[in-house]
Amino acid sequence: MALSNNPTIPGKVNGSGARTAPAGALSADAALFLKVFSGEILTAFNETNVAKDLIMTRTISSGKSAQFPVTGNAEAKYHKAGDDLLGSGNYLSQIAHNEKVINIDDMLVASSLIPRIDELKNHYDLRSIYSAELGKALAKRMDIQILKTLFAAGLTSTANYSGGPTGTELTGADTQTAAGLVAALFDCAKALDENEVPSEDRFAILTPFQYYKLLTADSTAINKDTSSGSADAAKGSIVEVAGIKLFKSPHIAGVQAAVSGQNADDANVANSPFADTAVNNDDAGYNGDLSGIATGGSSVNDRGFVAGHSSAVGCVKLLDLATESEYLIERQSTLFVAKYAMGLGVLRPESAVVVNTTSSAAS
Image (tube, rainbow, N blue to C red; front, side, top):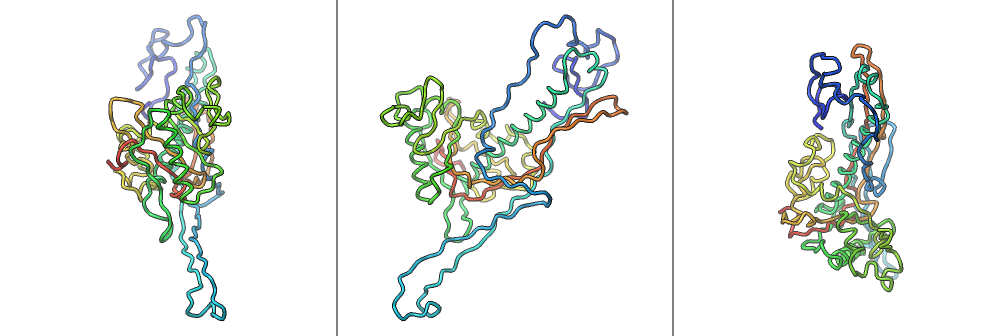
């Protein structure tokens, strides 16, 4: 739904634009008001949001950003008897230091205005429905932004400190067969192991097609001899593969669409998680172009996915998701607003793996 300066018109079919001139009960603005009410109110399904619980979150009470110190590794060396540790034996480790700063973006809002006369005419409560819908709009936006930042982490080619590890991109993966998905998940586990990422709190977020492909095929993911009962085809659930907990999200495929298909003002933020990647539009905030992850072929299921650890991405919250309303006497209407103020950024790129069906996300 496009944004405008016009109030919502609940009595108008697919209401948009300005209100029409008063025409009583026959006005187009009153078309949906009560004739004889017999049926259920149809409202949007709750969005499935999984990414927000898979990242590191810090809440601040004031300020414009949060700092995350980064330290490198020390080295060990056998000591020769009699050598001075401060002498010429090169026994001292020079530990590299850096920082990651995540800024607070401008406040993101979703709002709607309901005229009092329309509330009086209406035959069901609008306030609770509108408040919920506005909150869900922000929740979906946040989920997509977190997913994009996770992809950015896996595609990051610049280490946090000199000589440190970077993100991992696995190219040419087969994500349309159970065998290919299982192989890709084991490759993700191998990459995380090689980057010394903890085995706890590992996850992979798949498209619904990929998730259920693991369950509906005769694969090692659900074979009782190889999966230790971590999958249940009857319940449609699979817990993990290769020690990686599996989640499904309807937004994974969407973030791999061309930039023009995403919310354009994702570029109007204070963070640039794609700045250290080679993807197109790497300076456009959360709106980096991830269309190179999919081949662009005829199959809508030809999509990549992302895996990682909870340390890969950080979220700094100044204002958590909240809703409020106020009656405006001068407008004879009630204003509903949902809002949050937070920011996202890459913390540890080595903790994320992008599984790509093409040769490069930058293609």
